[in-house]
Image (cartoon, rainbow, N blue to C red):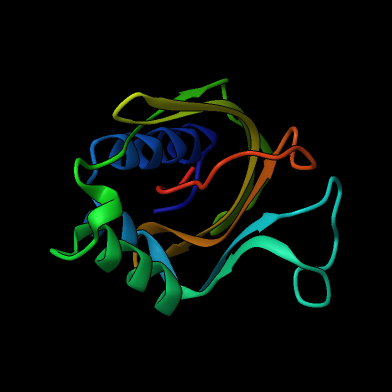
Amino acid sequence: MMLTKDSVIDFVHDEAWMLDQGQYQDWLSLWLPEAIYWMPLNWNQQDPVNETSLLYEDNFMLRLRVERLHGARTFSQKPKSRCHHVLNRPRVVSLTDDAAEVVTQMHYVETRLDDQMLLALTVRHQLRLVDGAIRIAGKRVDILNCDAAFGNIQLLP
């Protein structure tokens, strides 16, 4: 098997579907052990290590976040938050037989009780083909208005 434009575009849509359906354990299985999920704090930020980020999480922290979402004592999630991703057609920026970079502009809605938040995002996936399956090697989520004040993001855009 090798990566194709259609397979990586379908993967990005499937990942968003998993998040919208709350299938977090399945979603975690998409990640390579060394992958990083990054949400920069500043527009066009280039350095996630020496500059503050909204989110910079490795596999351990992603698993901890998912455990927290399902925790019996996570009172901030009673009732649970829900999300909805509306994706533009993903743009495949680079593609080889076993690696791809895909950029997707999307709207992300997160809701809980009477609160609803809408974010405009640009998401950059670094994908790898490992043992015949597409996996996330890295994901960067840029919020269009990252320099504005907004509430806590409970789930994962």
